[in-house]
Length: 267
Ligand SMILES: NC(=O)c1ccc[n+]([C@@H]2O[C@H](COP(=O)([O-])OP(=O)(O)OC[C@H]3O[C@@H](n4cnc5c(N)ncnc54)[C@H](OP(=O)(O)O)[C@@H]3O)[C@@H](O)[C@H]2O)c1
Image 1 (cartoon, rainbow, N blue to C red):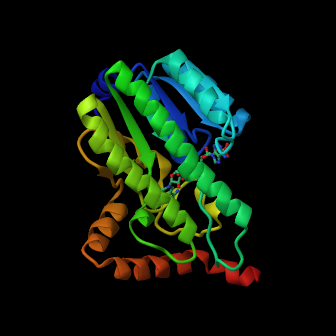
Image 2: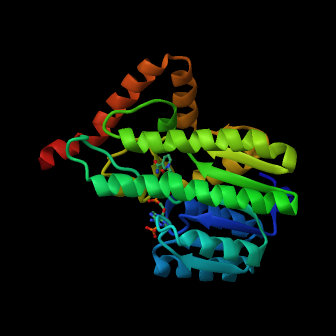
């Protein structure tokens, strides 16, 4: 990744949601190193503040932290105001969570909150950011999809469906916004070590560290529709892509069964 070019293309500032942990935090670190001023957003104010102080001390960039629950509709106006204040040219939408387990046991409110955060809020942020970026003549958008986005997956059906939404949103926006100077990419990794597995109650094997995600994704922004960072993700994505959709569903359902087997012991 060429940090100078990245800054020239998408600077001077980036908005990163989900920056208090995992992949969003890794993007925030990478972008601060490249010289971007930042707006960081998530619910946990203490973690955001600590990261904001560390990044401004280490890299001399200006960092604003916005402690918001993005599943609340009112958060969109707070974000829009920060985007104008900082002249944001790059948006990384990494706030999101997953769930897993039997559809008979899931908590309905949690599932609907997941749709609010992973889909409704992300769509609202993307549409507003797209308008802002088209007005300023250039910009970049990174949306967190998943290996699970490309087929239905049992025991994570609603989560996989939210990621299918994100993947489709990114693909459509990419085509529409490219002629207007705005690059859009979906990032669709397999398992990543972060806070995700604990919240989703999944036990993941072979997960890559979150810091392995930003560089290949930012390198691919403007060049490809979907980034698939990491060797295992590439191997899985390209071997699954040759199979019919139903076969992909079966294989990933088997994988999800393994990742959720510990739930049986809990009863
Ligand atoms: N980890 C994986 O294996 C994996 C694989 C493929 C795709 N993804 C996707 O990558 C994205 C990032 O996940 P991650 O692995 O980095 O998980 P993570 O470590 O749990 O981070 C999720 C981030 O989202 C924030 N968040 C959650 N609920 C929020 C809310 N209501 N309002 C505002 N912020 C909220 C969290 O901060 P607070 O708790 O402080 O709010 C945290 O900063 C997600 O969209 C996920 O679906 C993850």
